[in-house]
Image 1 (spheres, one colour):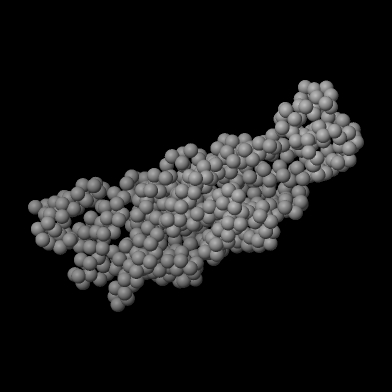
Image 2: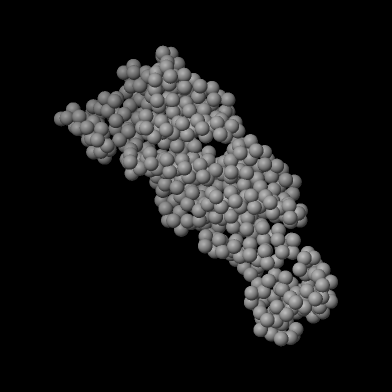
Length: 556
């Protein structure tokens, strides 16, 4: 009876009926185990591997790993060393994806020991790929990764193995990206993807290639490429299975992009459940999902919810920065915010540091630590030159503009802000676009261009409002003068309300008395009053402070 069920399970697996294949194989295994056989029951090693894969396709990665370990022991006991090493390599990758690099490295070492005395075959290519990937991810060693890629390619040519060709190109491309050869790197990766899409690469390994590249695009701020690779991953994953882990992984990456585009409600609805489902199978993508959720909640004003999401990310060994630091600053703890950013920078490689540098500039300037801000901006500019992606260039321009505004170099700040805004708009990064509009308004304020400043601030506020960024809307609310007054008209009214004459106002604002009279006439018309006394009363009713201000710039 058992052999009949195993045969039907193999047929079900071949037809993509993972659930039936698993049920049949588990029935044979569990029935035999109940009769006093081993934990693997009457299942031979190949059928244990089949059960592990069917379980994996159904999204139960933890159970799949347990069965794969049984398959490894069965292969090793039968003296099938290369097959045992192949299972060990899959376990190494599976544990690494979960986020447990120590166990992943242990399985990789076991595979290395098994294979070192065997004549080279395709399995050695998978070993070299993982060794190069681990070297790159754990220490940023692109030279070791490049050497491994060359070795994998040699094995691919020797055995005419398309899967190894794709993995060699992927590893070579990743090493080139880490080394700053951006176009070469993406060229290799795009070529690798053609092979992946052909179905030549086993799904576990193909998913790893996709996910690694998408994550790197995100780190480099290249949302256009991230979007293209995520679309490609979806085309690859969607027809295969709706239950295996890369279906959920793909959706998390899609939600990261939707978050940038401002679809915060959709992300809030989905990402927590997806991340929770990925815990135990793809821990670092689960952590990325929780960090994205934390950012949305923070920007929406849900500080407690943001804090909880950031904690879940940390539990999964994913850094919560810069979001947790920005949350600390928003809650009035700037020293803690800077400490968190410094710690995160110290723990990150040069690519991982890139996304932390612009927030470091912003927080450091607000905290009065100008040297730190200047150092972070300089490093960001160097990283942008080295890797030359649109997102990095935009971040570097954004950071440079922040420093120029801090120094009062209003005119000089406008050019890098315009460049950054163009990239943010092209990448559909809406919150970043709003931030730049706000900074442009600040530059125009400094130049005395009140109408332009109002227009930019209104644009920023409108974007924040559509996004649901309540704290930013509330922060900019004081910049919306009542009654349709301009900022300059408010400055004039504020001084008139405390009893200043037109001459006094002109002297304080460094403008002519005729200009003061014109502004005051506009105030009367907009407020519907006809005297200075009535204008002062209207100012008090509408919350316009009568306290004196420092002299403003000299452009009317």
